[in-house]
Length: 590
Image 1 (cartoon, rainbow, N blue to C red):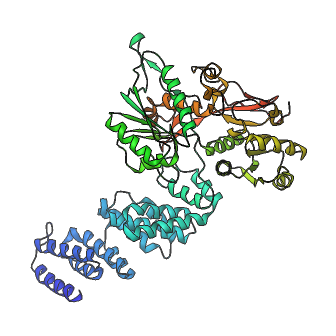
Image 2 (cartoon, rainbow, N blue to C red; image 1 turned 90 degrees about the vertical axis):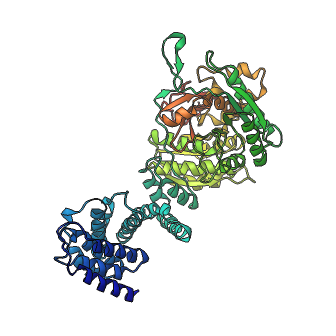
């Protein structure tokens, strides 16, 4: 390579000897410049630098000196010859540079400044445009990462490295991703949660932070929707009025488990769906509904999807099982899906689709947000150890601490005992009068836990997950008086415009029993189906549903805003009777 460079340099001197340089580059200069570029791309930075330095020699070409000297400085820097790079860069008139050349000049300045002035290097990296060629983008991001590392700023370092991941491939990409994960995990939960709150909902760095938090046993704080206007507002005069956001589908395929272990759940959702279908507003086109049994399996869901597609369906509602949703998403469906569960992990809905589910995490998030709205700064948590309960507790902790609160303790109650005194005493240490208690337990456990909390003279308000109330009254619920929890408004006839629960329960047992929330969920699947595509584009709008006010966030997840309920004389009663979230009084025994 050195021999080739020497021959090229000798030929260049001969060619330039009698050249006039009053205008643009001569053919000989163009050829030498092109050859220098070839050497640069091959990694022969010294050969490229010598060629560009010869082109930049005084008197050779006048106005072109800037470009050639700049490229020579760049090549010298990549060859590890910082002093020679500084000399070449000193010949450049930066005021005559623009576009990529100006960005390259600033990048070189930042790279030269890094060893002695990392703060300046970081500032230069931050001002470089995002539209640079791939090789310069990589260098700019690495400059920012290296400067941030030197300055002890792991967040900025990880963000810079994450930005390079789409530009890499193969083992380099995997190695880079592992480095980002390692840096973020090293920051710890409190710092990650605090920084995550500064990111926009669609920030591409957010999934990286979410994965790191999951590895640390936590999760991202949710951004709760700010709801402004309902979808479906009638626009236009008289009979010509149309519902804003309404999309008329011709054929909807309902994919549910109507056999197998999930049969009861599938039937409750189906009954709710058709209840809303037949009680919908008049004057709107009504789609033809095709029903397919998924058998509660991934294979059954894929087969049902293929059958629905062959039958001409233009919207899929379902499936219901988590692994079935994951299988459909992974199969790259071409039809839009209103999936009735979250697939878990980092799997996101395909373009044009959304996911909707009754998730235990939602209760934890809602309770945490509620406590912070009420000015509560401390909390202790009790869960009974099941997967759903621990997911709710984890989401509560992430949301509460992510918004500035402090969780003093999380206690898992023993399953082989009815005496929780030790757990209560241990958790309550340090809990002040401005604190609160969150319980993620079943009704039977709650009826044992709450009296023991009162015996321990804890007077702080108690909040619970939805599961504390099975959907029907029990005389023993007097022990739960004052406990507050988020729930579906339809269970309490608190959502105007929907058929009453009592009237439906006379003919449809699922509406009145333990399946009532799944029944309400099915109603919402039908209510959402004509509007979810519009809600994706209008995040401040909502559908007034049976399980709450329904909106769609930036990640195509349906968000539910429930009502607040508390036990009064053993009866679960809406706090205000509406979807208002007025302040709830502290825990009382009245």
